[in-house]
Image 1: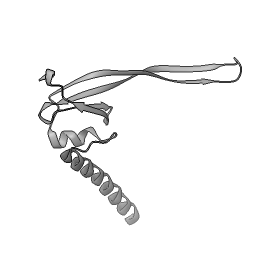
Image 2 (image 1 turned 180 degrees about the vertical axis):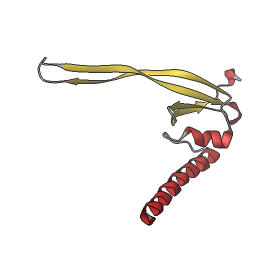
Image 3 (image 1 turned 135 degrees about the horizontal axis):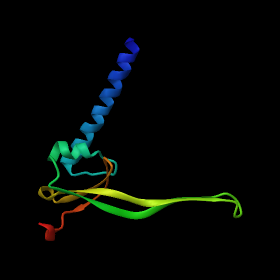
Image 4 (image 1 turned 45 degrees about the vertical axis):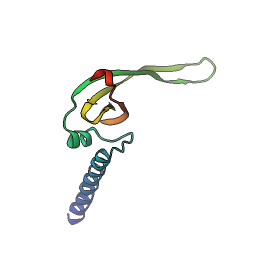
Length: 109
C-alpha cells in the first residue's frame, strides 16, 4: 500500500511540474508545439475569440501486393484558433495541444 501511495505522489508531482514549466514558458513568450491549452488559460485567461480552422487534407494509404487490395482513409484536421490580442498572438490548437501560432494581424484589431 505504501508503494502505491509513493508512486501516485511521484506521478502527480511530475504532472504538476510539467504544467508549471509550460506556464513559465507562456510567461516568457517561449512557445513550443505540444504545450497544453490550460497553461495559456491559467496565465492569460480565456481567449478573446475562438473559431475553427480546417487544416490541409491528410490521409493514410496502404496496399497489399499487386492489385490484391488497398486501404485508403482521408480527412481534414480541424484546429481551434484562439485569439489573444492583448499578447499580440493567435494560437492554433489540435485538441488541447498547441500546433502553431502567429502574430495577431493589425487588420483584425
